[in-house]
Length: 114
Length: 110
Image (cartoon, rainbow over all chains, first blue to last red; front, side, top):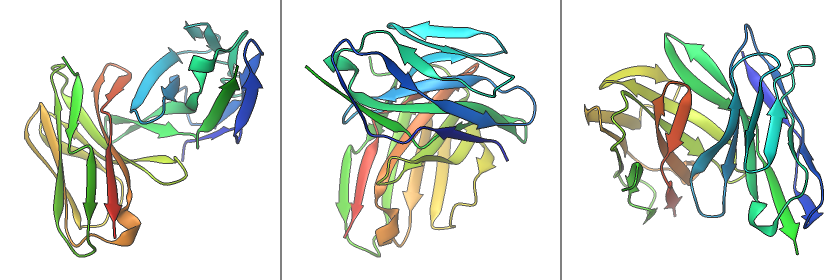
């Protein structure tokens, strides 16, 4: 079945450092790809998404490009802030029985120190 | 104002008890979900409903029974709670390809 693999954390960075969180996927067809973020004690929020190959999703300084040739959707940010500390989930959409569900990676915990 | 809300936020109970978690969305979406997040933060879908009809059941034990009285509500009833049911349960609703998550219900079974 479809699956998502993302780099294991935790990741600890200093403020203003460059962030990359790797995500690769296995899927039949061309699913939409997502990054969700979970701040401490909260539910998940959509951070960005891309629906087809070569699309770039971006939001709040974060970017990810849908790479069909490498089946990847790596998350990047040029300069992280303390407020970016959270757990980041890569996900793909999987259609089953006419209904769509999300398949998540295991999450990567990011801590940004001042 | 809250788009997807869940009650209760915390639930502590004894093994063997029966409990329910409620979810409501005011976004007008037709599709709602329940997800389980384990202690290692891994998220897995449990159920999906579309306009009150069960669409996805991901081999969840029969002790878990979702109920959708109307398309704005999707409740989760759990019978004979076990230690392994301790987790955070998230409700979500979907519009096009984006899912909107509730704040989660933290269930602890003692």
